[in-house]
Each structure stands twice: as C-alpha cells, then as structure tokens.
Image (cartoon, rainbow, N blue to C red):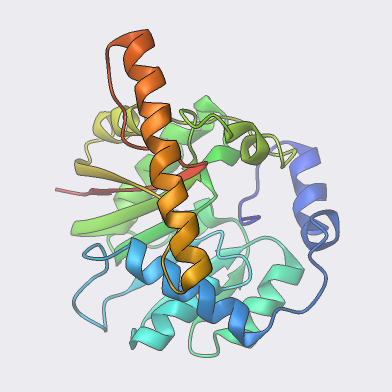
Length: 247
C-alpha cells in the first residue's frame, strides 16, 4: 500500500502517482472487493476483535479493501490512513462508513495514543528502512490499547518467489522472514506472535486444483530446506500475514 510518507523524495513522488505507476487505473468492481474480503476473512480468523464497535486503524489503507471487509462484517469504528490521492478516493467510495484520512500515518499514530484495539498494515512495513521501522513499531504499540493487536502482511523472504513481490515496487526497502519479524516485534515488547501463509483459498473447482497443487509444491520446498539445513519452515508463500499483541 502507498500509505506512508518518509523523508526520501522519491517515495513521495511514487506514492502520489501510485495508481498510474502500478497500472491500476481501471475502477475496481464490487466483485473485486468481495473476493478479497472472502479470502482475507478466512485468513484472519480469530485475529479480529469480537466487539464490532472496537476502534480499528488500517495503515496504508490503499483502495479500502480491508475496511470494506470490516464494514461488511458489521464493524463500525473504522479509520484508514493513506498518502495516495487516487487510493484515498477509492477507499472513500467503497467504505462510506469509515473515516479515511490522507496523510502521514506516523503523525496520526502519535496523536492517537492508546486508542485502537486493532491496527493493521497490509503491504506496509516493507517500505521502511531498518532505522525507520523500530520507531514505527513503537508508535503502533503506543496507539494500541492494552491487549490490542497488530496485524501485518508483508513479502516472505523465505519464499522461492519472493523477488516478484519484493522487487515489484521501487519503494520496497526491507523484507522479512516470519522469524525475523517475530524478533523485532518481541524487541518492541509485543507478545503472542503468530504467522500464517497466504495460501490459495478454495472457492470452486479451479481453486481446489490450485490448492492441491500448492500443497505438493510446499512439500517439495520443505524437503529441499530440510535436506540443506536440517530444519523446516511451514510458510513458503510469496507473502505472509503475522500478528502480535500489546501486553
């Protein structure tokens, strides 16, 4: 997502023209949002607040697909922050019940201490250098209530195909393994880390075939890893989601 401002000028230029640079100028349709929501709801099971009135912030909200999903699920206190004017316009169109803000999410976090029960960042943290990431995580922790949760989606450095995602955006700066992300979240005082693979979701015959073939591929990746290192990692998808909790 294009939702964060930094002190490097090329990022601001890129984010301002995000939709055109990404070849994504065609207006999305309802089915695009519904398909994304269906996959995300299944992937994030048990991670979303049980209280439908819980305050939720989506950092780098982009075109609002996650906020759309939450609205469809009945959540009522939703905020999205993004830099891209085009993305903001789409989010406001598709998520009329959410508060959509164009601006620097770091400043927003600083001004909203201990407010949110859930803070999410889909395709966000890879846009930061190392020296920027720890201060961001500190701001996120400060904006969460006690027991609040953070959820990230980010490229998976373990995946054999991570380069197609990691280097597909000029503003990507750093990439994580699940274990590496767990380390920096633990360093910031988060607990209960958990990571999940973004595997094909079964919703028809074609997706069933893809899901079955993926399980075979995953087994082969795991076997190669086991032969080389004697270890095992269960997440090989190009991106993964992870969560942790503020104690």
